Structures are given as structure tokens and as C-alpha cells.
Length: 149
Image (cartoon, rainbow, N blue to C red; front, top):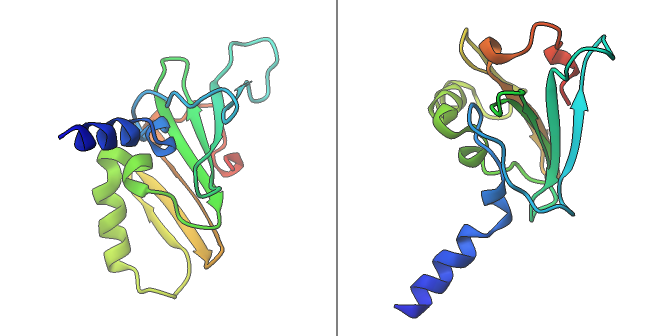
């Protein structure tokens, strides 16, 4: 029983647990792993449109969370040697990703799914994967989603 408690405590503190799910509050990554940066596209005097949180997971995947001033993640991007745990990054939007990947033939190019409530682009090859997911209704008006990296 003690072993189970230790395993649960370690898994709760693992690096993947520090990331936010899309549409939720940002993760609480430790200071050495996380870089915070405010961004105000096209205006230096206005309040920041979002805060960018950059982290790396245990597999070396760079994960960026784009966080609104209301403390909600409106977009996530990833780049690294493996695909990150999509259930952690996408949260309740994982079924959208799963249904898109079921209808997409493997090896035929990037996975792109877009509807009014959810957008995901995922591509790569062994050793290099990248992608982004965002919620169109939450993207600030002055932010261009093609610039999210």
C-alpha cells in the first residue's frame, strides 16, 4: 500500500502534469523549465494580449502554452523528437483529435482538423514531431494564429 502511495505521489509531480489542457488554466511548471513572456501584437502600449509559457517535457518536447489575461490557455504548440501526450495537452478536446486521426490515412501528410470550436495541426516523422492546437473563439482579435509556433 505504501508503494502505491509513493507511485501516485511521484506521478503527480511528473513533468507532464505541469502542462495545461487546452481551454484550462496554465500549468505550474518549475522555474528552470518554464520561460514566461508577455506578448502584445502590433502595439506596445496596450495590455498584453497573452502570456507565452515555454517548457520542455521529460522527452525533450518543447511545449508552448498561450495564456489569456483571464488565465485560460487558448493555444498550445509542440515540437520535439516524439509526439507529446495529447491527452494532457488537449484535455476535453482529445476526442476531436482522436476522431480526426481516425479519418486520416496514416502516412498521407499532416493531420489537420478544423471546425468552429477547435483547430489542430499535427505532423512529423520519427525523431521530429510538431503541431499546434487552438480554440478559435478564444484567440484574441489582434493575434494571427499562423504566427503561433
